[in-house]
Length: 303
Image (cartoon, rainbow, N blue to C red; front, side, top):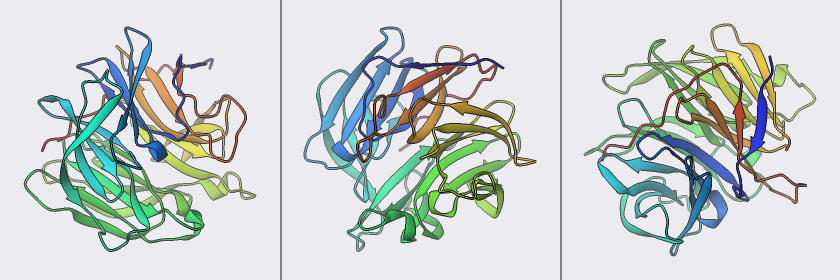
């Protein structure tokens, strides 16, 4: 199968993360995590708009808020905050805190987060000092409007890779430090998840390692796409069998996350990082076409 990998123009982020396709604006949102940067790639204009969140150090994810076109939920440290941004200006501002987790663990921070098909928040934390790949101080949470954060899983290394398959009634989750993808039973009406099982173990692919799974998405056929930090690859995997269906090669090593987008939801957007002085094009966001697959758009957060 022939697919094509192209750089999105002027899309550099030192630690690009959290791609989210917004159907209404035909735009891809993503963050530059360690500089509190939020970015919007406008598909029709083929142009990236970027902003810095005033007074913040981190922006670990960006989720558009339902019915509030200039409001976004963003992970800033251990807080999920509401940020006001018009999608064009170079500065964005925090207007309020939605909720905070692990307030006593100051060396932790939020990492990946997404909305489920019903607009609930799911996301988790990780250690942000020392060797982050050998610590399990994080937790995974869900949150919905009017409630408090609910801890789903404790002793998480690096909370990453969240995806849902409504047809299969599954929620997929990655703890990068465990080198595994977990599948939970998922109840869409309540948001409850249960019975985690390992469905894909990256240690078995490259035992010499380390091959760190990072962000993840699903297609409409139920296959998962797993980004590999240090692997230069996105694996397309059948979650029922654990079989790799396709290895999508990206021309840089630190692949951080993936999301389907574009007018037909058939472009796979891939964010990357430039940590520890990687050669170019590290930190570029890529678009992969010709995969003969479609995914799902991002869901707005209901607050």
